[in-house]
Structures are given as C-alpha cells and as structure tokens.
Figure 1 (cartoon, rainbow, N blue to C red):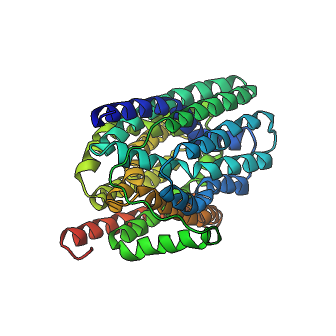
Figure 2 (figure 1 turned 90 degrees about the vertical axis):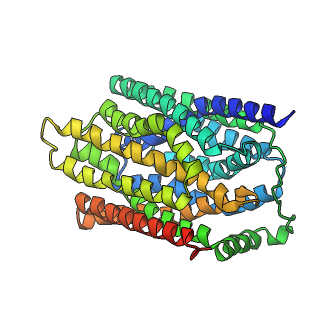
Figure 3 (figure 1 turned 120 degrees about the horizontal axis):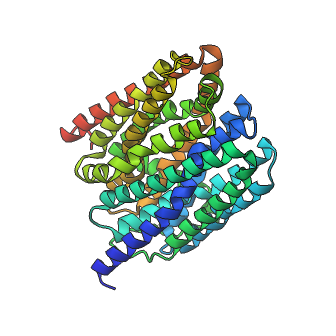
Length: 411
C-alpha cells in the first residue's frame, strides 16, 4: 500500500474509532455527577474517583518502555479494549460506590496504554498535518459526547434505573472504538526503536529512560514542568466541581450534564479543527501559554457564578462558565495529546507520551487531595482561587519558555 493510501486508510479508521470513543469520553466527563447523585458519593470518594485515572497513569512509563521496543501495537489496543473498556459491563451489577471505585481503577489502569500507543499511529502513519487530523477527531468525539450526555441526563432524570443500560452502552462502544485501532497497520518511518531489555531490568530501565529524557531534552523537561503546574490547577478542581454543582447550585442530572457533558465539550466541536492547524504551526510552548491563559478564566467564573446561586440568572451563568471551560480545554487537550511528538523528533514518541502521562499520575496523586483540603479549610471559593493561581503561573512559565526557546537560551 502506498503512502497516500496508508494516510487515507489511517484517517478513516481513526474517525470510525472516534465516533464510538465519543460515547466513552462522554461518560467519563459526567461520571462524577453520577457518583454524587446516584451513588451518594462522599467527599473522599469523589476525591478518590478523580484521582484514579491520573494516578494509574503513573505506570505509563513502563507501558511506554514496552511500546518503545515493540513494532506491533495491536495487542496493546486489545488489552485496552477488553480490560479498559468492556470490563465496564460489570458496573451493571454495582450498587456500592466503593465497589465502583475498584472497578474503575482496573479500567483506568489499562487505559494508561492508549495514549502512547495512539501516538505511534499519528507519528508513523500521519507525517503531515497530524494535529489537524487529531483536531477533527476531537471535534467528532465532542459531538457524540454531547449527544450522549444530553440523552443520559434525560434518561436519568426520568429514572435512575436507566443507569445500568448506560453502563452497557458505554462499555460496548468503548470496546469497539479501541478494537478498531488494533487493525491500523503502523508503518515504518525512520523511528528509532530501543533495544530489548532484560527481564530483571523491567522495573529499573523505564525509570532510567524517563530520567534520561528529562535530563537530555531540556525543552521537553520544561514543558513537563509547565504542564504540571496546569495539572495541579485542573485536578484540584476535579473533586470540587460535582460538589459545587449538586450541593451549592442544586442542579439536576440534565442541567449538570448540559454543563459538564455538553457545554464543556462545545469548544472541542467548534475549535478543535482550527486548533489542530494552529498547533501544527505554533511551537508547543506558545500554544500551551495561550491555552493555560484561557483556562485561568474558568475558576474565576465559578466564583462569580456561586455569588448568584439563588438568582434566576444562576443557570445561565453556569452554562456560560462551562462553555468558556470547553473552549479553553480544547486547546489544552490538543497540547496534551500532540506536543510530545514534537519533542520526540525522530525517536519513538511512545516513551515521550508515556512519561507525559506518568507525570499526570504524580500530580493526580496530590492535586485532588489539595482541592478537597482547600475546600474544607478555606472554602470552595478559596479552592477555586487556588486553581486560578496555578493556571496563571503555568501561563507565565510557558510564555517565558517560548521566549527562551526562540532566542536559543533553551536547547
């Protein structure tokens, strides 16, 4: 198959995968509301729920090292499809929040493979306009996600018993989306693969490789620092937002899902293709600084919305706040998923993205705890302001890194 056909086939299969994946991502965007309302989750359970995905990502560098040595990624996609998606079928029988946390932890563990493995497809099969293509897939996923969130809200407001059917739909759609990726043949493109490691080195070697990347690729190390600052801001918000929407604003399922599952996805639908083109043209530092600056508006708008909790304008303000969040997060998501390829150069991007995901796990262990502690010590609005400070610092550092890189001081 020639390169043109490989490109077209890859894009087509990515689009089909994205359509089904939109259901799964739509579910992950609203599951904290489900936990709070359907399972009556306590503060600490919401904190653990928001920690699970990033914390299990800590293991990504080990996945990444294995991927870096493997020329066949299909078996890894099947691992995700079965244990990271289809396993959600067991949620049909779950009635306890604690049991759900165990199930979701297992699912999240295997999903740590998906991002680095997917990056290999983009790096090898899409040498040109890869961020643009990723932008289109983000846009498609957001449409499916918004439809799913709307229907889920209506179903659950009519009867919470419909939650079991929702779990089935999400599990099957997630399985199909990842299974499709396993059939994409990854082409050779001059990527340098690492030598096989000895079994006794399986724990140490990935750590050594991770530290080597951070030590030898200084721009990449600075990028990780900037994203860590942003990550503390967004992950400290994660367990606090469902408490804010359900307890403070008293929103029902449909209103909550419109906020978190529809309006928060609207920016992906509208901006993702445009942002993909911009990401292909801009340096990752510059792109990230704009994205972090935009997301800094979100916690400030949450504070303003809270002051109108008993006002007839409250719901409108809530929707505006989450729409702004959606537009800003479209840029952040693009940067999060595609920037590692830029820093990898001719090396296999799997390890770069795996380290990127692993560092998400480190901040995911601390930031949600920080958010709940801040909420209990200085109040929910103090937690929002703390998040704003993290975003502001990340914006400043990213812009300074861009200036240093373009002037040759950061190499």
